[in-house]
Length: 384
Image (cartoon, rainbow, N blue to C red):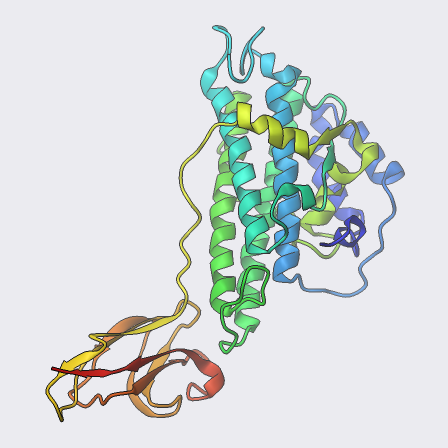
């Protein structure tokens, strides 16, 4: 498990300055300025471009999801919940008053549960521990007044969600780049890695699916505040982020103030997770299904008469490839087919017992190299 100072290494202040630029109109600008330029610890500047690893991306995203969990929980139990646009005077998250707005409260309750679900997924995929107790940060800091008034709360909500959206958009690009740089000979790895190209492409899809939910949160924050046009973007934005973990324009740099005691009052992740069982609201759905590279034969075994050869249909799926070859008995053996990354092909009546088919990545380089083998299948005959 990485220590807190490792999470923040190679980070400097410009990204935080950009992040808080939008907070000036919230009555929090002065406080934010103090955080950025006086009280925050000085962090080591990055002198060279360092590409994020997959687990660095997961770690930064986990910190963001824990931050979001803590934020939404305290909005649901803080003074802001009694605003008429939420639970109303005298109301609570689980018992809004007649003067409150139940759908708005449910937006926040669902958002809390969704952020917890995202964190659980990230923790498992990157093998970052069995529970939140081992997460890098257990306490988060918010400017004074964040949970006191609706305008302050939603202002922070929109700023945070903009950063989360930018982080996951950037993660999509970074995971895709890592997939391209990973040899097709690297097999699917366990939780924590090393990861195959297909797994890295899948992580890009997962990041996009989480980003879509964060975009919903941003818009629903505007709905709660009764903004004229909460869905005001043609396209979601990267919010000035160029990386997720490393560098001055990373998501880690942007979120550093919320990890810094001088920002404002401290709020506990453990308290938020314990209380979420009461105030959270369940949602539906699961992350996208992962489909590893596969090569199958049907039928297998092939029913034949004694002394006869058989015929079968070879089917393949290779998410990490753009083109494939299926070869017989070795990576450079006879070519059965050259096709796209999903398909099937029938053989003739020439398959013998123990014939091996090789699924080769033909996207780049030498498709007949052993290092480009994505999967194999051995076919047997069964005499009747």
